[in-house]
Image 1 (tube, rainbow, N blue to C red):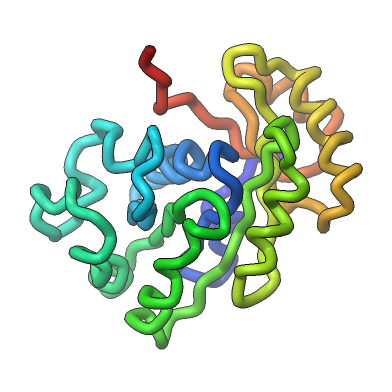
Image 2: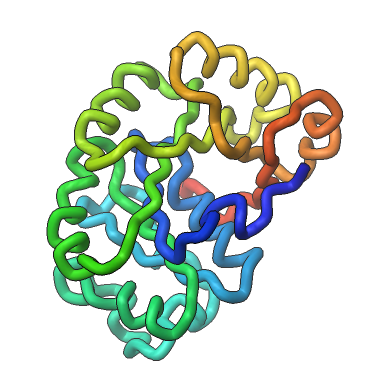
Length: 210
């Protein structure tokens, strides 16, 4: 079963992707925007990691009616942008910074969006070092219980076996069952034969440059 827009948003219009650094939040956010016309990504990462949603050239869709020059501003400058998009009837993804420090902007954003409900997701890559410890630190900072997105990968070495083994590693973390399984497009058909979870096949838009 392939995940649809409603799989992520349910009845809400605003979701926040949280989780440890390097778990794949930004890649998932960009793929949501690439796959669905009525989705906008708000780069809420104030800590300037190596890769950011705003660094990916995907045209002007991300800006909506906001001045395109603002896409290189940091969160404090344009923190009301999600409300503008929501009033336009768009679905909004808050791409939060990694780890518990990445959740700091939530306080300000929740005040600005006080009439809006935020559906929280924690993105988990069980192959990341200390994954369970780091996920639980993020959980301790969230204002309410989240849903979970499982994103088991080893970058270019990822195949169906890596994804399926990642499912087993996730079970050992004793976290709630994930709502969605993220995987590369090229392995989706093979995994779909043996997994009942909603699948979200993605492309890799972010590339590490050496």
